[in-house]
Length: 333
Image 1 (tube, rainbow, N blue to C red):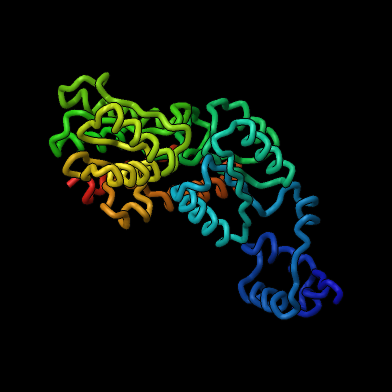
Image 2 (image 1 turned 120 degrees about the vertical axis):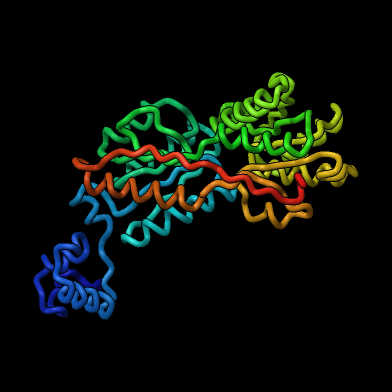
């Protein structure tokens, strides 16, 4: 079957090929009635635009990139859902890259995105070197940080206050009577892990306790399996009265290991996680957690990115910082 062309659509709709091109690329310039007639012709004929050809002409594609540090974490799955929903609403596709926390892998992914002439990139960076992202911007690719604050005025960012989240989590544990606290974290090369630790120390300091007494158990990965291993280490060293985990996957692994060892939660050890993923409420002992507006992070970051792509001269860069919300459940009650 021969491919349907723009000329075929134009003849079927009774308009010029230029009008069809405007409907595909600049629909706001076409009168609603004409646009509906062209869209009907597109549907009836089964027309599919030649994406690579339009990319060569325009210098960019109708795609954006999303680079995250751990797609296995439900937090980033929910962020991606917000990104994809906004992109889909305006006819964009999303190319997903998972850095797994590796700067080298992230750089490879970013090169691929640049080669595909994406309009923009949403990224939770694995490293703090701004030159890497400046190279993208030098190619005319807009960049918005997701779950990461910006430290410069010419950069959009959407993030959550992780210091405040760590402080609220440990303050909640202390309010339940705990006086010894452990912090189970992923690699302390990850900004979120560091800032949540600083918040935990701030809560101890505010309660008149020594922040240096915070027991830190650093895991290689932020997974349930790593949480189990961290719990085994804590049991061997002597359990504290409470455990704060840098994400819910770690906390669910800690919970599983504690229960398997006969440790009661929360009677013997209170436990709180971070992110409030769906599994948190459904665990054997429902997990207290710090809730983040995960889906909204993805949506708002994408809206900022697309606005910057469409209006590079007038776009106003924004730094949006959300506050996490404590969700108390059985594991701390």
